[in-house]
Length: 415
Ligand SMILES: *Cc1c(COP(=O)(O)O)cnc(C)c1O
Image 1 (cartoon, rainbow, N blue to C red):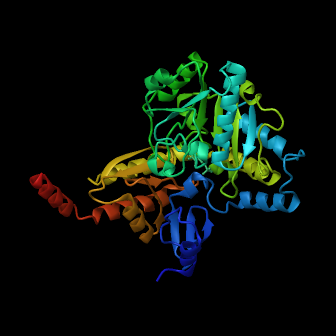
Image 2 (image 1 turned 45 degrees about the vertical axis):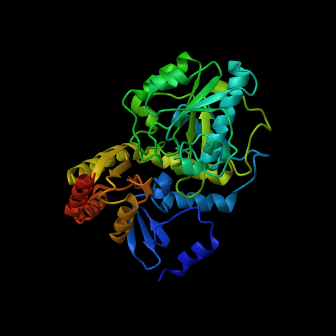
Image 3 (image 1 turned 135 degrees about the vertical axis):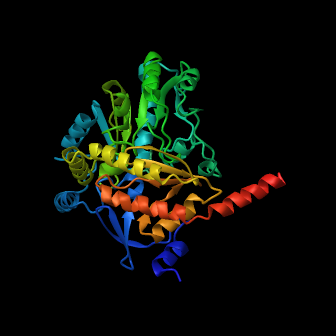
């Protein structure tokens, strides 16, 4: 019998998610607990939103203190939190100006609007003709405009008509980007490592080549670091792996310290200066509660050297997974603590694998049919990662590989 809470969600919720059958009611650090009191190691971190771990005491204290002082004012007034938050965000990222929003999708929408207006007003593209190049396999959120440039059939099915103005090129192929650029191209929006696509790492030198091409053609390079930013890949920004500075930068997820939705679009002065009062905004964007939590998140990230930690722990996790050396593992890829284990579906689907992981007290979620995402909070330690590695190894060892080989033999004969 399934728990009542699950039944209620299934009965009264729209069915736009397919969660694993656990009902969580508490989190602390890298651990989550279900309503029966069972403890799990969190290898998901809320799609990288919970980089600092659950209920980080300092973040919670900031949240409570700020909420009891001043939470929401709208941008009709200045607050004592927003200016310092934006300044600290610009210093952290090396950008000139920032525009605060709430969700990642809103920050991507902001980037699209900024790029288009820059294209028309600064680059001199004919009004309403600006185009934006994106990469195949991109994930940038679920708004109508964003799904318009998604290559994922399910994200689009039934949701048209779509927003025009986007051109898609293969990810990891700099020459394809250059070939797609025309005088109407305003920007290239790209993830330095593709997250939802299945943790896809581009070939070395890709970002640097893309930077050079964008500069040569007066095209904005906008990096969507909603998932890869703020330490996740072992650097402050994933762009730092190739010492690339984008013209525009999109942050979200862990910027809210795992407590609130906080996002931002940041950029060069001439790009951000296209916005005039009234052009763009959001009721909750930049509210003092979000700003205070965002400031604390940046402070903790730097002080506790969480990017360096992600680098060290990511290597440990990667080595541990590689040592398992099982035929069901097609590929292990990633950077820092953003790692994908690509499974050969003839052995086991990623969904079944995640269900078995949950039974062993480790929580993760598949992306697409074959990839198991391994992205714990950045505060995770080696012993905790070893628990996950051990559980993964045990599940793989329990697969009857002879059965798979027999089935394959039979199908080969039949073919
Ligand atoms: C999650 C994500 C987004 C969208 O963020 P939401 O907060 O879910 O709207 C955008 N870009 C990337 C790369 C993401 O991983």
